[in-house]
Length: 324
Ligand code: NAD
Ligand code: UGA
Image 1 (tube, protein in one colour):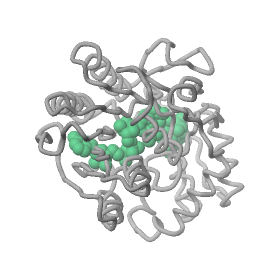
Image 2 (image 1 turned 45 degrees about the vertical axis):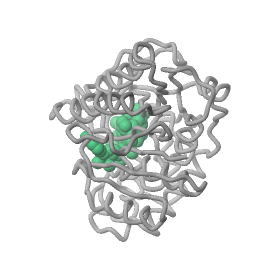
Image 3 (image 1 turned 180 degrees about the horizontal axis):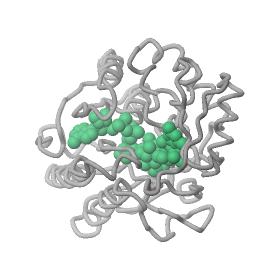
């Protein structure tokens, strides 16, 4: 099977590509190599992927560039390309609208025209906003609390619309805070591990009592692969929730136990407007019954894998290490 992965130079995209390549699939990666974080990190990920002969890479901006030449009836698309980041999305909204909405619309049009059998869309737990139903199921109210979350929900709604009105088979996967090897340098777990190695402080926004359902990146990559062949209905939505719903304080304690943080935590007041929700805690029951997916890596195993990866690879990229 041939799979096009958009956002292939990204954190989750590159891990998904490695998983598919290890099972012998042909993978085409597309990425515009944005500078939201150091593009050298992305270059290094692509350099690793192109060592496998059945991987090829196309630098394209899906909001502007055509990609129909890469799509056909035998090609599944995993659409991960996006402008991520909850807290940064209050400013520079144009990049969120372009990458998360316009690019998704262009891709769905191209997929439809080329007869692509299935598009898998990377949605986000952030679409639930301040949920009060735990564990949150897919039918809970959708009340995004940040411009990022609004843009991800818009992309998800486009996927639903193209399934119901245009006959394109789409699947949306709502990932919950993904961590593990190669994590984006703006995210909490990376910042904690980098701080333990380079001495930089980590600012914790607010009480640290906010809860995240941390999900290991290898499990997320498996969910993406499971969605390719699953017996799902067109337009269906699934939570991909890791089953490790813990507070930020508990995450800090786990990293401390794994790597030793010392006095690097600086607690600061939560910004008055951030889009940071108090709790995410998702039910993965639907994914288990239809995708045959459930998380397999617990928090201690996942942190240990991320620490090992940081030490063996990322610490050697100077800009990666100081980005915390
Ligand atoms: P990432 O930033 O590492 O990867 C996204 C990639 O998309 C980047 O390499 C970027 O260069 C590329 N990109 C951006 N705009 C593009 C465009 N117009 N054309 C082509 N490429 C473009 O982020 P990630 O953490 O790997 O996230 C991947 C996906 O998963 C995103 O859709 C994100 O919204 C979603 N998601 C991530 C998390 C998480 O915790 N990391 C949780 C929920 C959902
Ligand atoms: C993450 C991703 O960044 C989003 O792209 C994704 O859509 C979202 O998960 C999701 O689940 O849908 P977030 O949960 O904010 O968003 O992930 P982190 O950046 O790892 O933050 C986790 C928590 O730690 C948040 O409460 C945040 O406020 C806190 N944090 C983060 C800090 O206190 N300090 C930091 O330096 C970074």
